[in-house]
Amino acid sequence: MTALEAAIAFSITGSVLAVAVPAFVRDLHGSRLAEPVAGLGAIGEGAVAYAASLPIERAFPTSVALTPLHPPRGVLAADPPGTWQAPTWVALHFPPPRTSGRAFADGQAHAFAFGFDSMLSPLRSGFVAHAHGDLDGDGVVSTFEIRGHAVAGDPSGPSVDPGMFIQDELE
Image 1 (spheres, rainbow, N blue to C red):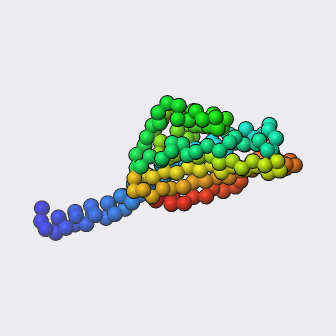
Image 2: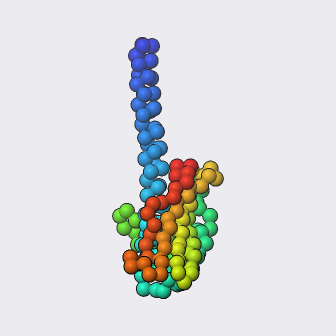
């Protein structure tokens, strides 16, 4: 192989890597982003279903701390049995059974921790569901958040507010 052939091979290899590596990294992070979106969707569905038959002042389950308490750092981690047995998670049916496009199932490895905060009053109750993950283990946390509400006299009933707050999605 001559020096010219080696230079051409080196430049072609470099060009392919310059295109392929960023796309691979983007896809890797993108696949991990499905977990918080699906998980928060499941929590929102569970919260609306829970609130549908209750008075406004008890529309949503009580707040629950981030579960697990600390998001896994750069790895997928399975929780010990019973991690998701707090009354709020049970009332919200979270985590749901593993199905295509859904969040993780209890005992299955995952990259995010989830929390649920409820604000209850006789005229308007609301909730904030949030997911936090440290995808690359650098201590910077991605945050995803949805909100929902139930208002006295609202004929449409309890609902999840449109949109999702996202901070440092690829941290």
